[in-house]
Length: 238
Image 1 (cartoon, rainbow, N blue to C red):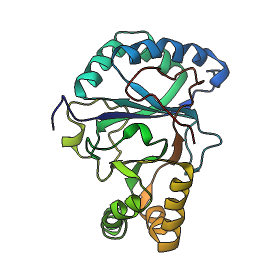
Image 2: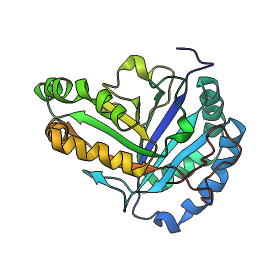
Image 3: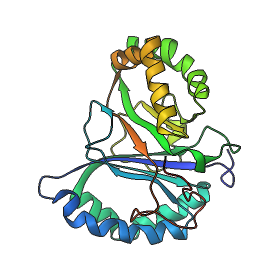
Image 4: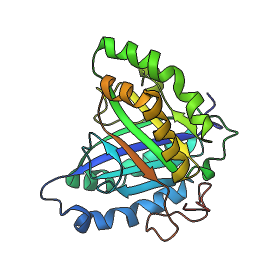
């Protein structure tokens, strides 16, 4: 893959520590400090949101963030500046969480700005047998059903060492499967979910995988983490 032309993403799921103060504590100071670093490297916050009201399976987190980068060069520059800032220490003081980052597998012809509603998950296979069940009865069908509802699979399938190489991960050694799917509307995403329930794919996912799954939505322009002028500026919030 070309570092110049392949989109990259970072997915974060976090849970506030008991003495953190949650969203009303020091976390309020985090996003205003993070936005300038994102802007410098043309990094877009595709989504930053609380999860208490989000649809989810096996919920285990309070907060999720999805970062979008135009290429690996942008990602590397952002990561260096982020690590040299006070933000990692602040985040670790307030939250326990998991970071996965990866190239998009959806291609460069996708209008990423039009993808405003996501399904995101980090999971483990319940067993070796469950992995085969999942690959046969879910993974083999996912691209076709996503395309029926104008969605795109940004990341799907086993999260291999080769896919992790050169990217940043935290507390992700036991994650075997990362999925990130984008849709152009909440209705399209819901139709995707309903179709999985009807055809048995949802049952397959639930019996073969262990770990959280969440719905995440793009940022509205009045959100404090919205980065105006970046390549991922959201034109709609459906």
